[in-house]
Amino acid sequence: QLQLVESGGALVQSGGSLRLSCLASGDTLGFYGVAWFRQVPGKEREGIFCIGGNGYRWDYLDSVKGRLTITRDGAKKMVYLDINNLKPEDTAVYYCAALLGLCPTDGEEKNFNFWGRGTQVTVAS
Image: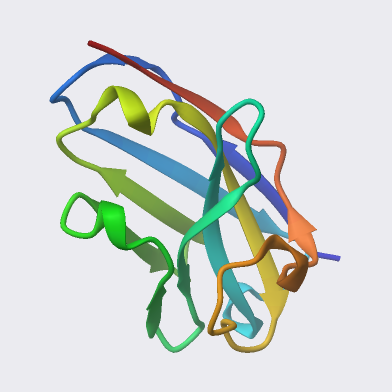
């Protein structure tokens, strides 16, 4: 069974950059679509991106286009989320999630079967 572990969360200053990592184990990562979500306390998780085993990317959150990027390294079993020009509103717990097969067209969390425990990103203004 696929297992996901996020890392890289930190307290950073507004305007800075951060790379979050998601390490997959237990199965072949190429079989899965892998997404990043984020959650602010009191709100639902929102999908950001999903990247398929073929590298095709689905964008779920228009508000972060141009600042956030998802990439994957199959050999290392890693999926990355790069966040540039961090803003206080980026403060959230960031989760890695996966489903067997292709990325769904919408970023709803119910579409994803496998989840990491999350990593906290806090942006100071």
